[in-house]
Length: 374
Ligand code: ADP
Ligand code: MG
Image (tube, rainbow, N blue to C red):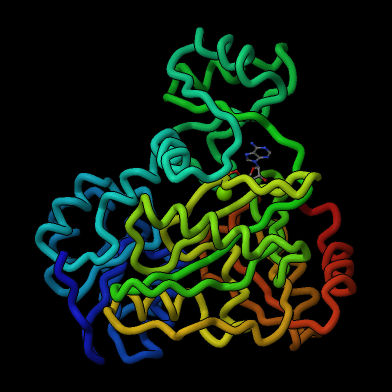
């Protein structure tokens, strides 16, 4: 693979114009790059901070080619871009992230198989292609289990928790529609994640271990530093994963922590991640800054410093009115609104980050404020 070192004023092409594309673009512009966004939604958040906007489907070959022609490098905020198209593009244009990692990670089955090959600890799983495989899943995995579509899931979409046999009908429907995997539903003590960035010179930097709480399988809150002594162990797991997968740019590994403090790798996002948003204010480089440095072919800082402990709360559709009622009283909350036109329940509309001297106290304050909404 040949890489290209960008110069100030060069264009970075981003596939996907959601909040991740927007925050990548803001970092890129700070460093003097121009940004072109490709997104099917004419009102997508990133287009308002882009120099060029290509309003087209992710699968539009001509539009992708145009993005390549006007950009010195292509990156993505969205890993469900068609892997074959990405491969074709990477033969023509500079795409340091390549296409293989995306191809492996956009299918939960090959993702899990890759994790197995990397010898990391993962939750037992089984491939489920047809209804009859569900019986085998019950025999092998037991109940409760969680069934997940192999392709296209995010924020808990395409997932069902099956606690008893009487609930199997829903799982049968899911399997009839699309291939799935079933995995053991484990009792979680905590969830944590590590965000890392690798540059083209083979240097990797790690953000601090992040403690995540999900509600309805959607990220609700991130607390940093995580209140569990597993950072080194998590980094060891990330290093094992890097022996099997090529990364350039920012990526995140999500983990489950059990009551016995066992660490299981859940999944990998080959792009900046919601649980790394706190880094914009709380670290000396944000996950978007390091992503842009890496894909631009620049060097990364030797390490990332957490400047202050932080709490990040997601603002979903149902939380936005809360924000208007309350946020003007709290200039110490860093408010991010993505600029999405349509507000829907459980849609990520923004987030707030608070830097804090007292994580537990501020966590209780936020829990109280958001109580009953998620
Ligand atoms: P997504 O792609 O939607 O983020 P995940 O596989 O990360 O999918 O699942 C979303 C959330 O659902 C997890 O962060 C966790 O809270 C819960 N979850 C997923 N799998 C399991 C499991 N096997 N056991 C317990 N909880 C799970
Ligand atoms: Mg996840």
